[in-house]
Amino acid sequence: MRRLMVGCALVLAACGNKGELKPAVGDSLPPKPYGAVATPTPDRLVEAPSQTRPTRSDEVLRSSEKRRSDEFDLPPQN
Image (tube, rainbow, N blue to C red):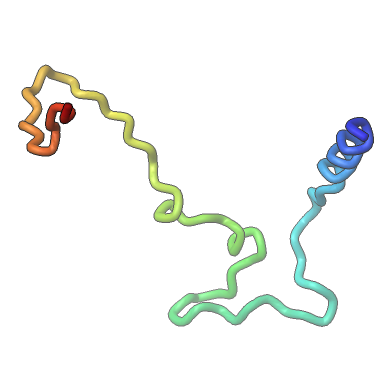
C-alpha cells in the first residue's frame, strides 16, 4: 500500500507542464487593463508583483536598546 502511494505521488509530481503558457483553443487573453498600452503576455500575467511578495525583514536589534515595560507580563497566580 505504501509503495502504491509513493508511486502515485511520483507519477503526479512528474506530470507538470513546463511548456509555454497559451490560452485554451478558442479563447483569447483577457482584455488589456484600463490605462495599459498593450495587452500583457501570459508570462507577464503569471508574474507576481513585488507588492504581493514583500522582502523579509529579519532585522535583529543592532544595538543594545532597553525594551519598554510590558504591562501584561504578570507573574503566575498561585
